[in-house]
Length: 517
Image (tube, rainbow, N blue to C red; front, side):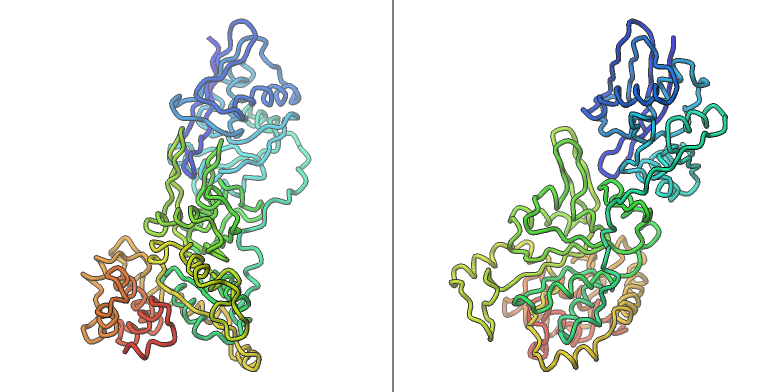
């Protein structure tokens, strides 16, 4: 009996499962693969055969049967190539017995035997480490990403020949490096240069964005074209604190699976930013795919900002698909063969014009839309989505005379980010014994039971509730914003003014909270 074994990892979303690869040789020449492989995996036969031959090894002239277990789990992708090649060569006695038994092999083979970079290395190495496999072999281009997992010995190889030499205990042959790959740009590319100091005036809008960043409250920016909605939204990630170590690994794993992790940046340390175009499909935003299910923009924005400019122009089905992650912080994508859960705890920023032409209510230009068209335009964002928006800001274009003065007095992002960080630290201390870390995540029942402000501070809330302009859920959400305002001000509990300001943001009447007090 001629049998060889190796191990790899199968990916389901951003979770990995160790896969045992067994190769059996015997009988008339042929090749078969079992274990629910997809088309790209079935094609591994030709890639592996060519890579073995061009590496100077011998291809067995007998029947080869490759089994991938667990057999009930669908296997997708080309990253099993290296493990299959090792198992076949071990079964043919070209490698020592047991050479690859406790090593995770992860990589695609080219026809000349070189190893190509693949997606999903970080969750694959993490799955191997959790299974007690402390050695991995990956393409050299993925080695830095694999080394992010502590306690794992990583061999980054350029070719199958180098891998085989290492398994035989021989010096690895020299191989010319691959030319540097262009790769994708970081999802935060260009954002570092954006500063709040560039936004002239708009004090109320910048205050609302700061509150949203401090408490992780979803925000809606409304106003005519050119008022500054996009400028503010793209500067919001610069106000957020750095990702923690665990958050960095979590976000990096998502970006690795999605194929948006740049080769020169193996670890994501800043909150990501995703800005899908309004023509994007539901699968592009929430995740999916026909052959291999991959994360969408909502998951790429995990722990960061999802910005949807011209929000009413998005498909209604795309917007409504965001209900689940806005409540639970995750997306469940169901297909015929599998159901996959992607993390998606993002800060949503919606920007919208008042109507399709953009000038409804403008003092400077006439609107060309009928009242019915204006109503239909606003109704494209459904009530359930609006109900999950805590901070609603109406932005008016600044006057020309105030631009220079406003620019000179504008605070840089660094100063605002320091206030946001201080407010976040107050929240972490207050919520230390709970599953939540920021005010925007705290559910209504916990707010009512444990975080109710003093009775004298609740006047603006009671007044709006009695008038019917604020629902019970809206009152809970306004209280969460009030706590964030109090954290920014250093208050031990929200004051009457804090609650009034929070209610005004909930109602979309920022800057007018004095009339509610």
